[in-house]
Image 1 (tube, rainbow, N blue to C red):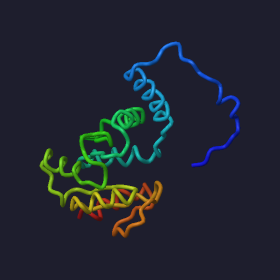
Image 2 (tube, helix red, strand yellow; image 1 turned 90 degrees about the vertical axis):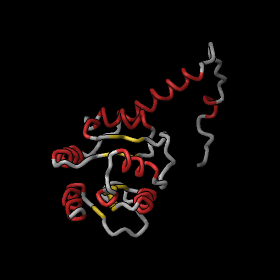
Image 3 (cartoon, rainbow, N blue to C red; image 1 turned 90 degrees about the horizontal axis):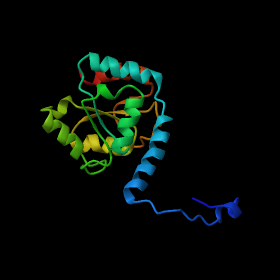
Image 4 (tube, rainbow, N blue to C red; image 1 turned 30 degrees about the vertical axis):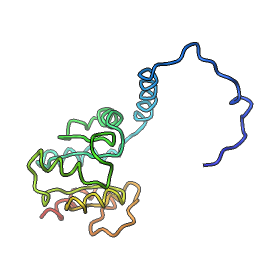
Length: 171
């Protein structure tokens, strides 16, 4: 990243706080900022229908995200879909970050699920690698950012087609 000299006069003003915040106060302030940003995250309207349909059809839904747990929970709750998921694991959890398969192995063991019945949906190469290392099937979520550069057998380019993609793969 590069820095510019625009507005340096304003940025050079010395700020002297009336008191220094404790680390807990600073953390709470940082969370407030993060939550304000999380409120702005608006999910595609189709995602509600897809998640609800999968839930009603008896699929067990989990999330393993690189986002921190509090911000992830807040975003899901704010968008009205948190309760559809059995477990939500944020990036600041006890698990190694992606592509380490620790979180998937945890879910397999805790919920007595066979890895052949897991279908991991992700939008990055680290998601693909995680599914591969865990021995799970994978769908590349290409409707979002299409960040998958590795070769994967199953790609879904439109969120509206996700349910048919899932059904085709899990036959």
